Length: 111
Image 1 (cartoon, helix red, strand yellow):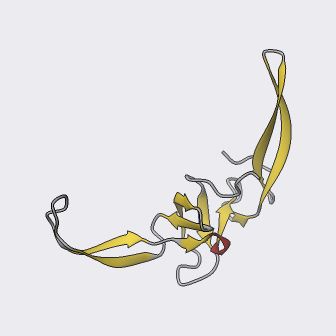
Image 2 (image 1 turned 135 degrees about the vertical axis):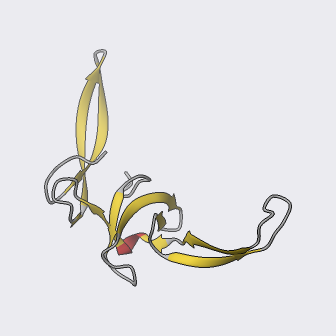
């Protein structure tokens, strides 16, 4: 099955304390969670060690469940569901089946 969310997608949080914020997907984790830039910021205490000479409190993004985010439509800039179209392309006389993600509101293809 093709992925509905991919790294680099612009998404909007639809549920939780950061509702309404938009950001790019930094990582997609296997347990149905995503890390979004600028969303779900948590403070983490870091101890100094051989690689990291500095210690202190660091802010970083924590994973958020993928059901709490929606892809932003490139045309309307509003959250939309993602659909998958199956297209056939011809390269050097060979036909190839390609799955393409698209925004359901506008019908525009997602990168």
